[in-house]
Length: 126
Image (cartoon, rainbow, N blue to C red; front, side, top):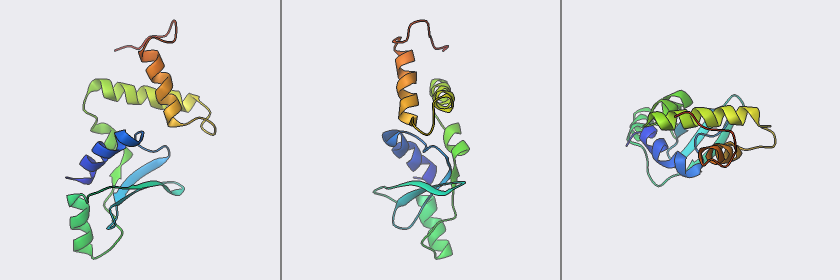
C-alpha cells in the first residue's frame, strides 16, 4: 500500500485532510505527519508502514521521510465526481465560516444539512 492509498483509507475516519496542511509524510515510527506554512500542523499514528515510505527510509537510512503526498495529489484521487463536488463545496463553506472559531467539521455539518434538505430554499446541484 502506498502512502497515498494509506491516506485515502485513514483520512475519512479523521475528518479529511487537515486544514492548513500542504503535504503529508510517514516516518519510521508509522506516524503520519502533516506540514504547512507554519510547520507540522497535525499528526496521527497508523498500524502499518506504507511500502513507498518504508522503501525511501531504508534506501536513505533515515528516520524522517522526504517522500511526500501533497494535498492536491490526495484530493485528485477522490473516487467519484460527487465526492469531488462535495469536497469543493465543503472547502468553500469553510472559507466563509470564521476559521478562528469554526472547524472543518462545521463546514461538513452545513453541507450535510443542505444535502438533506434541512435548509429551506437551498439545494445542491448534482
